[in-house]
Image 1: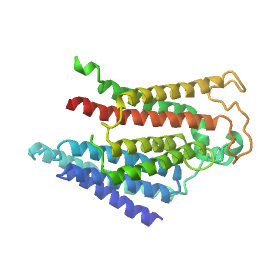
Image 2: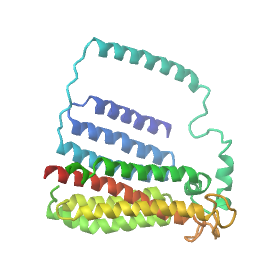
Image 3: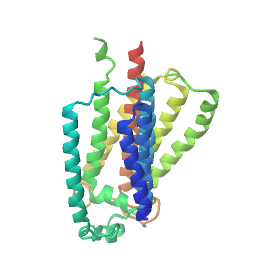
Image 4: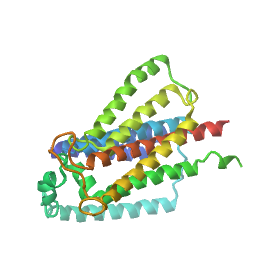
Length: 176
Length: 145
């Protein structure tokens, strides 16, 4: 399983890098789709169907909206000239990247293998959730009972996002 | 936005209802099978978005719809807060406590208030995503006039 997840993660990284450097914005949007749908397969392999359902629907809807936006607007990316400053920034980024890779490789030896991490706090959630909440689906039990404040916050964030879009794109105020 | 060809319209007419019912199934069975309010709400919104994309925004009166969706999501988020406040009156008198009977785990009618939260969160998510989509569509129409 680790091998297949690594292959999919490699594809996702290639897709993300291509999305940054693509000249055509439509192919950049499609390449971002690789990242989203690769994440869906990763969720399914890691036995998280709840997240996979949300991710696959949200990814499809976002991709449709993004493709519609790109087709209606310009498809060319703005040309950015490379000067001394951007080369310096790239060198600094590469040095930080190399340093992070070095320290992460050192830290990886002390980590537990994938999927076998120790459960301290969440052990009582996993074992006692069914009789505490009555919900067979553990994820829903956690979402609406143990972490209900979190869920209320998420719903309010979505509400605020819709309110913000309606305010920014208001129809009546624009005509004055 | 223009509508698409007759084939797309016919297939969409056949599929949109099935997708809508599947979203309702995901919401109602959120405490038994994978899914829940967030996933089901997005699927329900997807059924409407499919219809709008296939038939074009000019064929439908979308200005009335955007008022409806924004009202729906406001009422749904209010109902979630009211459900949480009702827990202060009954049972353990704690915000967000599960004050209804838990029932047999695995049944459709079980887990107390969790299915109710699922339903209202599902309506909220569907309303919010549809509102954002309709606002973008209507803004484009208004701009081109």
